[in-house]
Length: 123
Image (tube, rainbow, N blue to C red; front, side, top):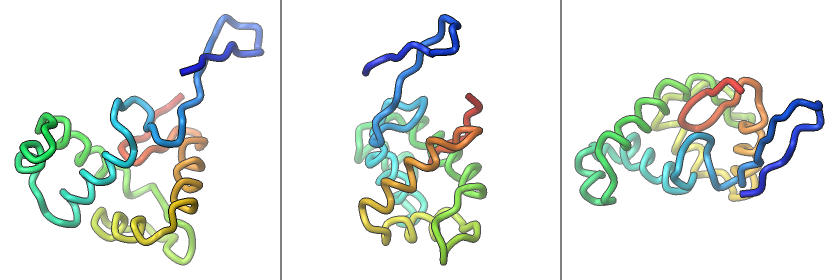
């Protein structure tokens, strides 16, 4: 991933994440969304999903917990602009077209503090 030097004169660098990556996570966004959908909508437990996906149970449980905390502040475009519970949020998100969803995630990544599907991170 390419790093850039900050033009402010300070010796800082930064990188721009591709749309398919979530800040502070090593998994692709599509994988995270599939896991969250399985746990929140289909009701598959973290232990069962862990065995199915060959991922640590704690990792999946942490993703689910972070998502449940942050979903209150994430908003889908109108007419679904109100806060939704996790299952309804994920079902509404899956009904969006690919480019609309990608644009939504780009917008969340640019917010301050940084919003993500699995957490809010101050820059």
